[in-house]
Image 1 (cartoon, one colour):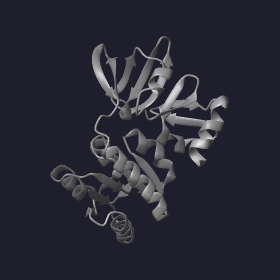
Image 2 (tube, one colour; image 1 turned 120 degrees about the vertical axis):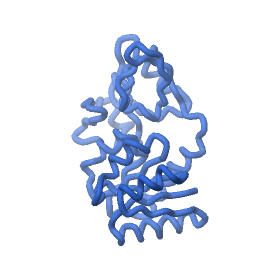
Image 3 (cartoon, one colour; image 1 turned 30 degrees about the vertical axis):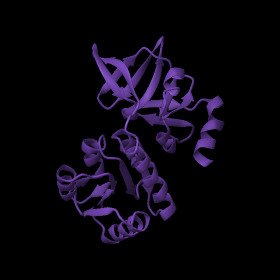
Image 4 (spheres, helix red, strand yellow; image 1 turned 180 degrees about the horizontal axis):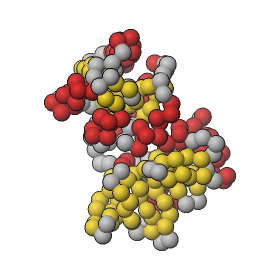
Length: 221
């Protein structure tokens, strides 16, 4: 495994290097102190997981994730909790707020490792702007019931599929959780819920009363 740490603060770099080395003694750990250096690693090396800060002196981790998170599992580590929605919208796999424990990083890296071992990612046939497309479900931010169809909100636009919410939930490996009678969202976005609402892909979703207990169980075990 090759882990890329993208962090411009030396103490945070050293902590992440130590944690990753403890968890994966045989891993190759690369460190980028800038967005430019990170881009060089991401375009010139095989990276299995990226662990990135949000705020870099010459750019942002979000900007990098928008370009590379579709192919590299991306974990944000940041002191700013308010960027979670933006981070997940650009494809982040997890979002850890500093200061964090080794146990919290373990959870994120283990999820990323599981994704790496999943070769057949679930997809769904749909249409976008009148053209047939195949949409990987891990790129969908919101699934919205729309009459006899569903609307799949993605970074590239809205696709329409001849499916139901129930059938989407039944797809093996489906990443979604139902939060309202008309909406599914990826489970990772549950962390962004505030005041019983969730914002994803510019859609504000009220959390349905009947779904709140299940969501609390997902979040707190």
